[in-house]
Length: 346
Image 1 (cartoon, one colour):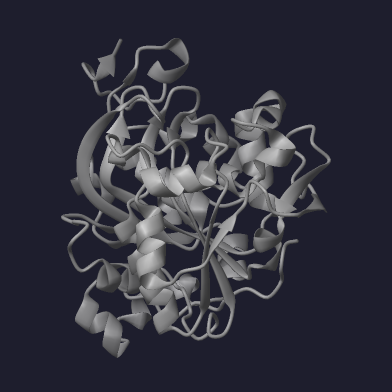
Image 2 (cartoon, rainbow, N blue to C red):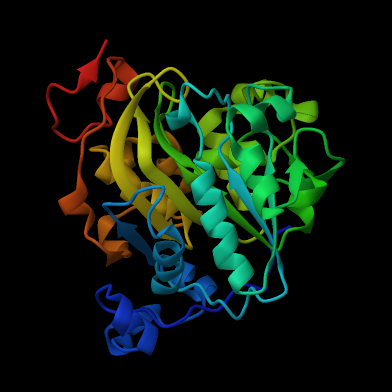
């Protein structure tokens, strides 16, 4: 399912400045990153854009558009292509909006890609909810889809196709993907930034668990859990078509995530064309060491870079945005924290 028809990057600026970006200045600072995305990966480097001070009623369209261009996404490549947006709708509840991707993010990303003449669809296979219609109501996403006339694919129940497991980190020989995923030329991971009681954190890589159908893998995807969560996170991402990430880190979840945690305001958007680099950068903002997060360990070198020296920062520097997330006081979670005493929770 891996495609060799990858988007070619636009020029990147040396330091993010919207006006300079739009007139194309600063390209000389780019160096080795002014190459096709496939070549970028072969050289082990990727760019990640961070923007703080964000709000759901703010200029999200402008920020997301600028972030994509700053990290090398070529808007001309996507013209006329099918784009599937994959938000997190794991177990939505109106009283816990920090659990799922905010509809404002979905609407803004849709506007960006429609502005570039792409054909946009939203798809999700909620991991804890069999009634997808209820999930759309509880997340308020259904209202947004109706308002903007965005088609929706219920990935839990669509017809499926088996594809070879491209990385074979887990024992699974292949994976079943729904029709909408198979037909998409670009899958955009739109996760909610959260802690996770088993693997430490969940962002753009883990969010793509929701591309696999419940009719094949169960609720909550127990077949994948038994094959190993870190391992299957890597396998899913290695077997998908072209992917990019736009992370909803505005209202996040800390503590007992990804379901029972508490709200944490961060005001962050993270954007990138390499999901591994995006998640490693988000981990650093959360006060975590990406090298201690199991699925990022496995993804490093297979799917993208996690070393800071290999991730080119666009927009704002992650060091200025660090805001440690509380996590459960469990042995397997203590090691992921970067010398941040006093932020464990029982």
